[in-house]
Amino acid sequence: MKLTETLTDLANPTRFLALTARILPWLAGATAILLAIGLYQSAMAPDDYQQGATVKIMFIHVPNAWLSMFVWGVMSVAALGTLVWRHPLADVAAKAAAPIGAAFTFLALVTGSLWGRPMWGTYWEWDARLTSVLILFLMYLGLIALWRAVEDPSRAARAAAVLTLVGAINIPIIKFSVDWWNTLHQPASVLRMGGSTLDKAFLWPLLVMAIAFSLLFITLHLAAMRNEILRRRVRSLQMMQASRVSFISEPGAGSREAGASKEIGAA
Amino acid sequence: MSLGPYASFIVTSYALVAAVVLLLIVWIIADYRRQQGRLREIEASGITRRSGRSAADIR
Image (cartoon, rainbow over all chains, first blue to last red; front, side, top):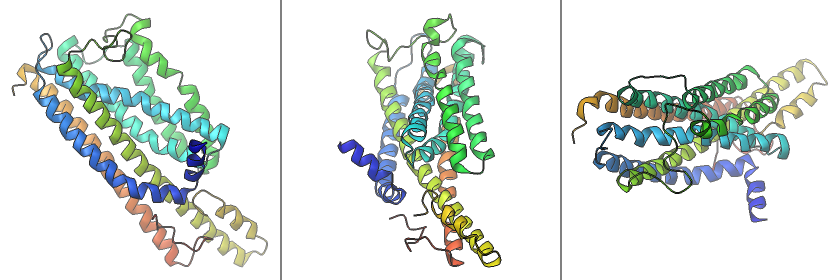
């Protein structure tokens, strides 16, 4: 009941903007502190007995890889919010998350390549894990292109939500690809049945970095959502401006002005 | 702290992550300022929200 009330409250873009204005500085501060601690711990972590110092790439590769899937998960929940609950901020949340998710996926791919060259002897291999993550990256780019191609945000929202939910099939494929197929990529070593196989000297810096990157995502996502709400306010005010001009020159065009003011953030 | 024979791979990875994260932060801040500027511009031309509140006011 409390959650429903909170979600209803946040459905109001003005209340959402007021909330983000209050919490963003705190989130940014917490992110910076955790990143500093995580980076210090990563620098101080011992070398691996097989990989040597290249194990340090894990502390940035794994958080980015986790977030590449987590962000798509957030977008999938937002897609349900758009299609099922018609939550006014659901599409805003999905659209704002896409470029951030694409950036994390890009970083997971590139840091993975840079880790793979000294350890596997190759930058790239068309194995199940690497290929499915590349597909995820391409899907992020496709969604961003879709939002840019359709001018009306409500029409773009429904198409993007359907595409996001279809693309969500790829998330379990990425996660279990190392179990289902014989891949060059190592199997899960942190989130697995029977507990982590990582030594605590590597596990703690990795967890701190993962929390820091997750906080970074939340901070950037809220800020990007705020921008998207403001962008839609600009659009609705521009439509009001345009319809006023046409109202003066053409009587009976007032209904268009009413339509413009119904857009998100216009109230 | 010695990074061994593969130091260039490690340093490039961290530098790239730092660059992309910084780029994201700068892009989001610049976008915020751009939208605020556009809202003020439109409001200055006499178009206001039904509530009468400034669209650029987020508090």
